[in-house]
Image (cartoon, rainbow, N blue to C red; front, side, top):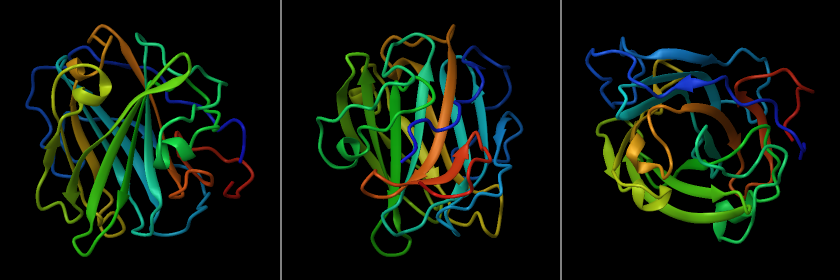
Length: 241
């Protein structure tokens, strides 16, 4: 595995971006409020189809963060992971290995060195029979570094037929439920993928005066083998690692 994995995104302000209607959480990233902050522009295709990224969209009304990733995840145990770096809290510093000490995927991905600070990790995988549930778990890191808390959020139907909610704040140190949805049809409609609404109050130490950086990737189910597809994207050696 590479020791350094590209760069986190540029800064995104969490203050209110406007007073228009908020995005609908349905796994379709076509809402007018969204700002497209990242686009997958690399030719790298480490895990092959259908593990694909399209783009990332963000919007904040000062109370909630709306985040959407167009793309698709294979139903083979691989994970889509999303790291959040807020300007307020101190998580695992850039250049420091993610800690171990939990169980399952969160423990197994330990030892990875990221290109930016990691405060929160959201990781999702598909399972079960069609429409395969899109399972979402979250981990919160501190700067010891250690895993402060891990927790399962909920599972959404992969056909986008419904959004679901779960107690995000119970894991991330604040208060509030998140809502998310997933549509596994990115290969036929490039506006489809994983969409979520997260209350800023759910994250301990975070306010809407702060900024956010993000980093997304595909990782195998045991956390020790990464695809070379990332958001932000990059041309590296063209191989999965």
